[in-house]
Length: 239
Image 1 (cartoon, helix red, strand yellow):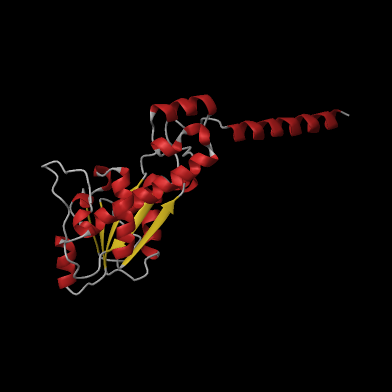
Image 2 (tube, rainbow, N blue to C red; image 1 turned 180 degrees about the horizontal axis):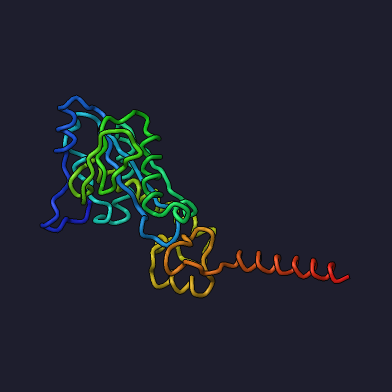
């Protein structure tokens, strides 16, 4: 399997933390990571992956990396193998309207909670990249760059990224003006140019700069209808 070589200062993830928990009598250890938190459009996606207890550091588990270090084709191949080999896996979403209403941090935690709740077997411990999950009443270890150190978290990062990329390609078919299939909703120059020309669509996060308070075509139509209704009401009152 081809994969992008890691820089020498970024060691490959391993099963050290998972094995310590397995040896402590916890067979189901879930790694959790997210994708899309900084995008201007689309959902934030979280994934949870449980590596089978006692798994060898071989095959797909030796191949996984932080999703940001892998080419798209490699991620897609690994995602299929992870889904096949994992003891359990799940994805959850925090949608654009939830991000605007709750804030991106809370929406990310919501997506992670949904991913955990979707697992086919209940985990006894969570390994999480950076984010703390106080709303989930489970033992958890959260630390920075967990996706570069833990196999299960790296696997979760891949599933989250691949799932979100697929969703953004689907959104591109619905809103082709923005180029979502290419930049996946991030602030690429083409995306910013499309926003300047057309304003945001319903998939955009209206609370994010440079989108905050930017009107959409839907807002314009609603305003025109409201103005027309007001005009008709005023005319009726004058009579």
